[in-house]
Length: 505
Image 1 (cartoon, rainbow, N blue to C red):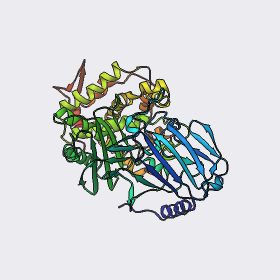
Image 2 (spheres, rainbow, N blue to C red; image 1 turned 60 degrees about the horizontal axis):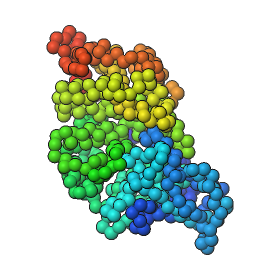
Image 3 (tube, rainbow, N blue to C red; image 1 turned 90 degrees about the vertical axis):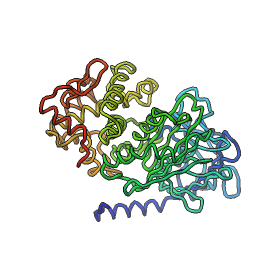
Image 4 (tube, rainbow, N blue to C red; image 1 turned 45 degrees about the vertical axis):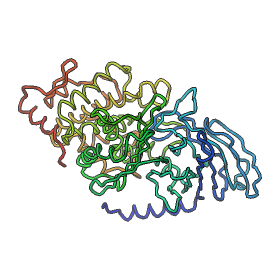
């Protein structure tokens, strides 16, 4: 357990006192009236001057414009006597209430995203919502709004589901009421309800819980846990200590995902919307494990290591971060290489599977003129959304190259893994990195040459020196082959051994 300084304790206490002065937002989400629409009621407590009610234009980690206000209907405000108050719709995501001091209750309806056609800015299923007879998927930002100035208000959630539904979420619960410290915390905590299976285990000091909805009961939480156990342990070995006490996986398997599948990371949970299959081939098992490995590693970045843009998230206006290379690219690199270094993947499986795939997709699928900086800056635009997927390919390759460059400069003493461990100790929630100076800060923590690396391959779009860099650790890239060299120099052999099994701190 890390010791808090007296200053940190005082700051925490001061923050808590401020939070106590804000009115508590009491929401109810009713899922019993329809299989297409969520009915929302909000008792906001005593309001003073707050009058604009905001729905999310985007959400952390989605890197897409959503405009949730498109899904809202029948938005009304009432006083204590049940009299309707005047409401004005200011924009797609904002409503203004004439006299907020009289507000006793708000009610409105929200269409689920899975079955609602959207002509532009389609919402990814893992960041959306679903409501059917046997289950519901709730991503809080898709249905709850907040008053301007009260984003930090504590809130409670009462969930009205169908009889027998089980609830899976990372939120704490007390007598059927789920609690969040503020709006951001609620958005950071997706909810899966319905006919779910449950399984749990412990990885060192961390409890891991899995909740699964499988439309035709083909995939169970027990089976998922069995397939993921080695990955969970490998992640713990890679990080030495997991920075969470409890972690929740939420799986939604269905035969129709509207042509899209995916996953979304959160601080204490991750959520997956995937195609339901028989889950009985090594390829199917590995595919699910690979996705889980990526999302689970997000407990490091951006959920612990991030800039002020993530720390103080702007739900009103999508704001890109130049450090998308770290949040998604390095996470993808780590989620792959930790499996190899833990012995879950052979060298050939890692090189010809992960590395080769990243090279081919980067070269053949996406626009080669886009730097990682441009990809980040344009991520919320229509064209940017088409190129966004390359962050998992080119971004992962950047992670490989940075790891090798650090190992070279440090004579094998520091790779990207060790840098991440140092960053975990130096930064974290409540202590964001600087959006503007982080590249300089990384160079100061490592070597001056690293600043040039970022200038060339993240900020600029210079051709990635894949063959040159991989050769430093005895890996040959020739055509579509990525393989270990048959003959290496002593320096290559030494760096290869460190690069391969670098799991000791």
